[in-house]
Amino acid sequence: MQVLFLALGASRKRAVLDESAELRASGAQVIVVVDKKKSWLNQEFAPGVVVTTLKELEARHLPRRMEHALLYRVPRATVRAVGRGPLRGRARRGLKAYERGLAAKLHRKVFVPAHRRLWPDAQARMVLAPFAARGGLDLLVVSDALSVPRAVRLLDAWATDGIKPRVCYGLDYDVPSGTQQARTATTQGQR
Amino acid sequence: MKEAASRDAAIVTPWYPSRELPFRGAFVQAMVDATAPGCDSAVVYHCDTWVSRMNERTTEAVEAANRKLAPLAVRPVPTVGGAQLVHLAVTTPRAQEFGPLARNHERQLRAALGGRPIDAPVVHAHVGLPGGWAALQNARPDARVFVTEHATYLDRILAEPEARELYDELLHRVDGFFAVGDPIKDVLTAEFPHHRDKIQQIPNPISFGTQRERPVTGLRRWLFLGGLIPRKGVAWLVEAFAQCHAKDPELTLTLAGEGELRAQLVERVRELGLDEAVHFAGAVPPATALEMMREHDLLVHPSRYETFGMTVVEAVAAGMPVLVTRCGGPEQTLAGIEDAAGELIDVEENAESISDGYQRLRDRFQQGGLDLPRAQQVLAGRYGYEAVAEAHYRLWFPAATEHSGEGLERAEAHD
Image (cartoon, rainbow over all chains, first blue to last red; front, top):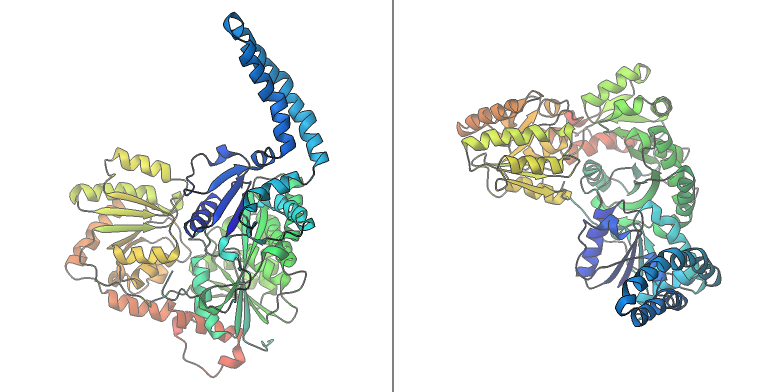
């Protein structure tokens, strides 16, 4: 099974850690998408659970990789080639100033808006991309309130391509396709 | 009185054990486990409050998105007692007041139901606000609505004018209202004397089905189960344990639960040099909690306030003596069997009351002064599944149960 957790609000961490670990232990491919990785710094995900951000996934889109090469990798390579000997310090300072003053602004104010206008479904596609090799996403787990709008946008975008994974608010509330619900659980004798 | 046409019931609750909060609503789950088997069908609507820091605009956008998501994400799954569980996320801004929170639950439950009323002739809600209000506003017109109140923070709810108004209306409109213990009943009858006759009492049910393999032979392995929060008296517990451990180094203490005091308690345990003797188990699910009760010798429950004290009754059910404060609920639940079940101590802001209580209890235990089998028998009659379920059935399905007069007296609703 291939499962995506949306945990952008980081407000239900215990559930996300517990459920992702359980899925991983059962052999599922699990990706947890968070807003800021630093919000999860003190949390330990189970081995094999991939934690990423929407920004990281979006940055894998080819136009964005080209932009990154143009804005960052080419200038860095140039500085490495040219900035030798006595020019080294000046070249590095110049590169830093360029990246902070120009490249970052161009990225934020020009490339990102243009990218989203030209490829409005890129984010939705890139979120799905890691699952493509093994047959696609099976289950989307929406894990907190702030993830709800993003989940709806992703589902809308995927629906246009006919992709409809199961959705749930937690692993315990998922009903696998074709599963009968007749099984009766009981905690008689439990708390 | 309106009469239910079938024995179908719906349960509406903001609390039910989940991965995020395994403890929360264990008593609701127990109530479902006790009552659902006697119904033709039972559906639990767990309106799970999902709190995030959101401004007004984001709150509205998130709720609007959730209206679209809920039809895709909400599906019934099996839960205890043969009931079905319908879990829905109620997106909620941080620090939402109780009145708006109740209306929020009402709206989001309605959205999850697709605008249709709850399809059951009997609706049993837990917690007046938000659960009772959401149930009342979404029940079908001919449904009979009952509410069980457990909240320890009723004073805070009733301090808010809008929430107090909703609560008054709730009490007016429901068909039956149950407090789980005297502390809640006392607060409500004082606040709403005009509803005095409607406020009855039915306790939480406790399972007496599983016994420990070996009886307790010494009170060495202490257990605390609950939130690591000031109201639970855990800071005094650690100090009292240190005093007792100084006299008997074989003592151990397991603290199962999470809360704002955890870091402070861990630090204090380190300062006291008790790292080896004190174990922080974190939050554990209900089944694990019961297992832990069967693996420890003594439940220490030094709470400052409890409306019922379910953990205390569960501990006795698990064959475990209890050292517990007279903090509202426990002195009522253990009435008449205090000495058979363990030791009750006053709520005092010191450690000595707990450590002295332990010494007294240990001395009595060694002299054979406890009678746990008798305590279990009495408590099963008061809080066992059958007794509590029967009390509910009498009110939910009066025609069907009017000739079955076998319910146990103490669990029956009474004024």
